[in-house]
Length: 531
Image 1 (cartoon, rainbow, N blue to C red):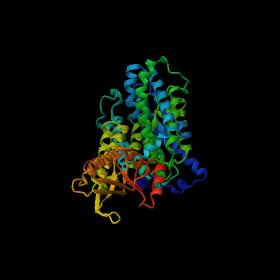
Image 2: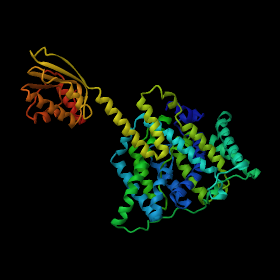
Image 3: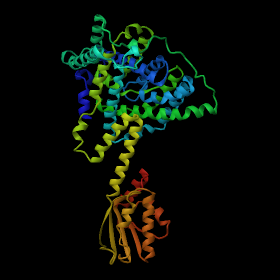
Image 4: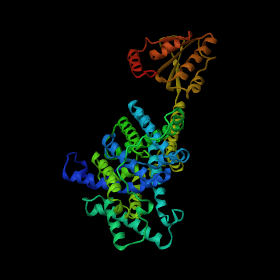
């Protein structure tokens, strides 16, 4: 990630590291917002088509979600709007029940996200392992790349046929030209963000020469008015709730997962952390408002966030400016924006792909544990084949199972004769005792050949869960059946209380001078364990 951050960070480091306000800082933020807004237009229109709604429904969502999250979100520099991950879920709802049910679903989705923020559930995003994050960004880079390929289809055929011949070559040439400008502009000047320069130069070239290439206006007209207050026209009854609730839960989960992962990624790049709970609440509030203003809802957009970071956006001004510029495009400047060649925007997104993909992950594949390498590849593939939320959940589950398996194999014991208790045998347990290691724990003991008194010392072990307690109780039962005494040492008070209820056990804690400290720690943290 460090290499990724270094590669994406724009060259004007003095401005970006300056925490004070200045003319240069405001100019950078505004120009970054303009660049993001230009890239948002075709994305919002395309995602609206995916969801089966009017383009303005996507554009209004990009404006409202982008504005509210920029004002109150947990990470300045993030960009939010209508996304493809949400659109693919919405299409079935719109097709079966209509767009009004979509608006109601977006409102409920926002309420659920606000609840998640108030309950501080966003903190669980820290449980996402680093290999999952690498797979996430790699898969997302591939998804962004594949999404741009649809721009190479012929608008005259309704998007059914690919461009060919000279039209294709001209489109590719303009895409490459845009990428070259973005790569070379920082070496000349940092006054204008490189992506904005690429879009502007290529647009002027196409318009001046009258080149026949697909433009934004070929996708759909973006002309419209201000968003209007609109209460979703659905029956307020239990049947409606049964229809929209499953979709709202899925959309809320996908939106929060994508937003919180983007929050972490932007935080690593900019060297600052944001508030996960605050981001959940901001995302929820923006979707509630969007649902009442005829928008399709949204979440954080990692592609546009990377454009913002690359262009120098570091504060809330850039996000606010992007949303306001987008509204200006809709209300006033639609004829001009519709003339922008799609090739220029595709070139920008291709550079985002290059900057987003964690190329360093390819180098470390043979150096990291095999399971970590597998998780990186798995999450990348699942992201491309399904969606980001499913990929992250799969990656976390696989990582958790691998962690549990590795810990299950760690438990072992050292045996010796007791120095203070003549004739007694001591088992010194090492490694965590939990559901995955209980079988291995039982196998450590030679019950039939052990002396009449056996001491099990948990000083270097941790008793983690109910399965572990049950295993200890079962072990005590086996020794009792042989007429032998089992003594447990260095357990926490919680373990002591639960185990003594069984009636078999004899727990000795007097030989542990730090036992009381261990008890205090276990009680404070709520974790069953040793010391």
